[in-house]
Length: 275
Image 1 (spheres, one colour):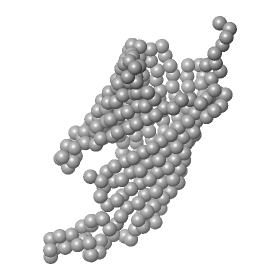
Image 2 (image 1 turned 135 degrees about the vertical axis):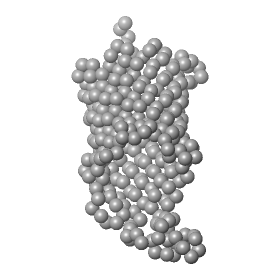
Image 3 (image 1 turned 120 degrees about the vertical axis):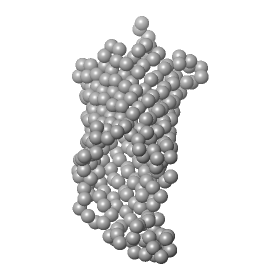
Image 4 (image 1 turned 90 degrees about the horizontal axis):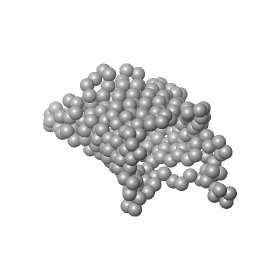
């Protein structure tokens, strides 16, 4: 209870002759726990794409602001346990350092992706570095800084047939001594039925683990692509020792993606009277 995340993002290929520039933005709102600990992020981004033969290279830069807040009135501290009554007494001093209830900072992230198309499959590999400007964060006016977080990703799309493909993926994240590895695959089947509007259905299975700890969770997902929408639903099931504290209840994630019609001028799409 009390853990929710909402996000809204947008990206657009700019109108240019070489079609190599894009802009985008994302808004993220995250609530953690019942004390009103929230984090709001708003970023704008830009990317540049370069093609060389069958290879493509993408460079991205993201910048924006982060606002963290919490409600100290809802927090419970061990020093406020009243031994005479056996209950928590919020009137008693917490013994904690006086803290501001909000903190904000400017943040920057960068990324690079390489991709290549082959006859039956295509592959992409990328690396991203978050918090490259070491922003200060904290509610006590301390000089603590957010450390850079590294993200590595590799995915392969294998076209088994003209109607079915498999897409294995691996994502590895590392922040100082902590790391997380997510690996699995998505399977997609093209329906070939254009009358219903459903172009394809997909499902996937993933595992979240780490090099220095046991497997944490199993993630299953499913959804459909219809018209210009992609609707997906995933379930995160905890299988570690923490399941005794969550009563084996996992987390649902719902996503909806709309891909609009490109506004980039394509001279090859013009009809020609000379056949």
